[in-house]
View: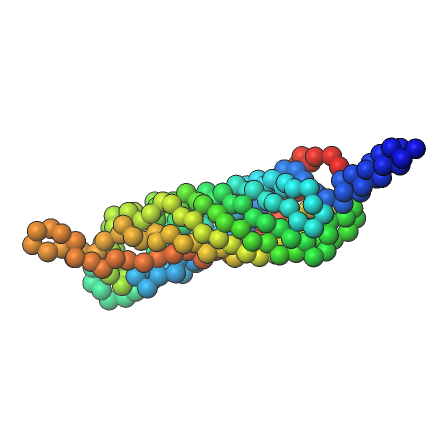
Length: 230
């Protein structure tokens, strides 16, 4: 009799824990993105962009889970330049897209339940393959010098193609739909290999070392395309 009672209690707790766990499965993601290059060495303005990708929700707890995601962010930025006459500052559109792999921890203040809205904070890390800064649409940029160091398009193409950092925001949803509103901070210096026209008589670069890191705001909406049954 005692064994039967213990078995019943074990099955009951197991059933409750499975029922109350956060939704697990694969989601398709689409949304909006805007990336800003934070730099005093390249004068830029961000443009609105888009993101698409997939994420995987995993974990067995009712109050939190983990989110592994792969997303491609399509972004551009306006870079200020002057032409040969140095008469007027203008803007040229450059690509600032990346392929991003992230791992985030989701904690639910309102816990996920069937037919109930859920929401909570989110934090995590990412690594990204960054597209080198190139003119958007392959426009002709000959004779343009980018402010404030009068860089050429060939100089900008040497920007770093690897980025990493961390992000935080809010996650939530309702049944098979989710959303993520996130702010990410890139920690890699994307302009570390970009050099000004400053060399000594031995053709040794004399500086300065340029600085440029990304700040990105994203809003993604996800829909579950495959789920693990409770």
